[in-house]
Length: 129
Image (cartoon, rainbow, N blue to C red; front, side, top):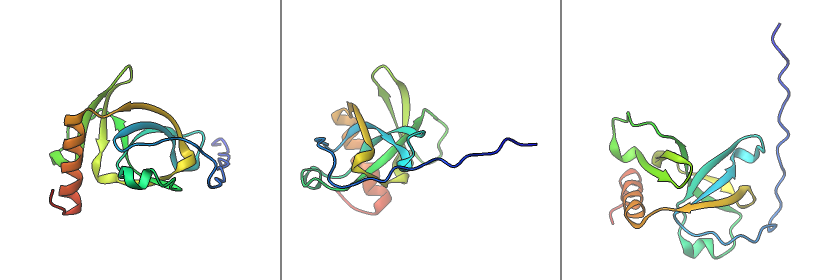
């Protein structure tokens, strides 16, 4: 008989209960979907003008383990995180996370990676830069 699965108790976040300074293109460790058992990495894609206004949520692109077999080059972007290995930015998975879900700042994308990410997001969203 299968083992009984217990539901995960999700956090209830309150605003404003954080004091972190967040910048565009920083990579953070986050509690994914308010689940303390599901910690992932994400890159902040929201602009600094909004970041400085102490928002309740941030626009991010999640990271996943390195997977080089993607047909459409602009949907994924590959990066090396210091002391963490290779990762893939899921450019087409832009989502929001609670400001309180941000745990630790890990790294900052290099200028070349920032420009590539900005271009890839523009292609997906249909903007021109």
